Image 1 (cartoon, rainbow, N blue to C red):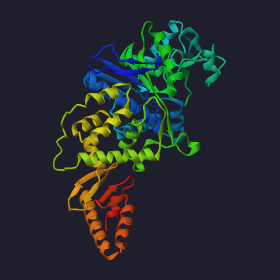
Image 2: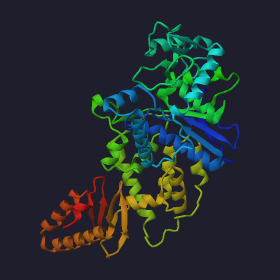
Image 3: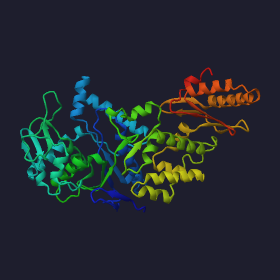
Image 4: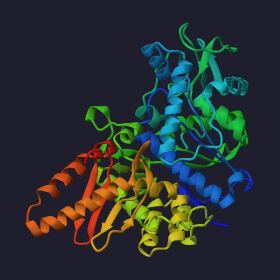
Length: 487
């Protein structure tokens, strides 16, 4: 059995992962509030915990791992969006939830085992709140129900803060009905034009924190193995989850291992609309950046370190993926690796199992590519979430040798980007034509025809690489096959 080691935020140490039940490994990750498109930072925890999900499935078996990621589909931002667009809230959340699923799929992420929505578990939340009141951990005040932070002695243990520090460093909602400024809302009244549910405390809706406690308990039980999310959720969200869950279920551990990923920057700066460096996953996809490139860039930085998205990293990631695609597709008539259930080498699995050391894993991928260890390369890339067939289809370039008329990498009809098809034979013809034009130009010293074709190809989004070894045409991020017509 592979030994998995994970950095547990709760103990501030790397620990050997020992599941409660190896036949039923359980993980919960806080999901999105679905009111708009997911920005690039939202995607980082999805990729991080997708790799962990794949690792757990590899070690314990796909049928023995349950991964739960929720959707918050009732929230102030969602209500505001519905009012702005004059649409029903369920229409807004249905649309934005599908956007999220589509964008995360484009990055190569598996869907979790279960994806509960908050509005499906209102009854579970009400029941947990009633239990907290009965046990003396919550109280009703002016139509609200609040958790009494003073009733839980270990409050602040996860984040390592005292209550005084948390009050000083947090934006605490000041309300006259609170007994303690740190007390947080479990239930609040709903306005006449807002979604609401009947409860013992009147018509209202749940606070944010109670959602995850109620849903994880309902699906995974009082104690489960792993709880994950971005480190911005350590306080107050995860701190509050622990408090209410342990108070509602005395003697339980709630979650035994806590994993938190660091935040994302863009070109060394915090991503923000005011700096003009804020963009969504969909923005990048529509600009022609393949989801595989985004994923590769993410995995190049350890999840517990801040990740800096840069144009240089994007270019390097795409170049590496093209090398992999060229190697795997070097003989289009034979793909012995397709359909083969190869297992990644032990050194690779150990790298991923050592607290998700994906930078080391990618270093090993480069080694397997350089040494042409095809089965190791394919199996390792699969564990990291890359589809080998799709890589060849999307990233294989067109390389015509200077010494003959055969492509080192040739393809027929392939898919490039999201839903764009192109005919490899057309680019092959372009490479042949460019090769002949260059041969003539070398004799006549007139390179105008060569330059004209290179310019036309560049405008179509094709990178032209010419050397003594031959001609290589690489469809780039902005490739438009329609512009090849008539050339």
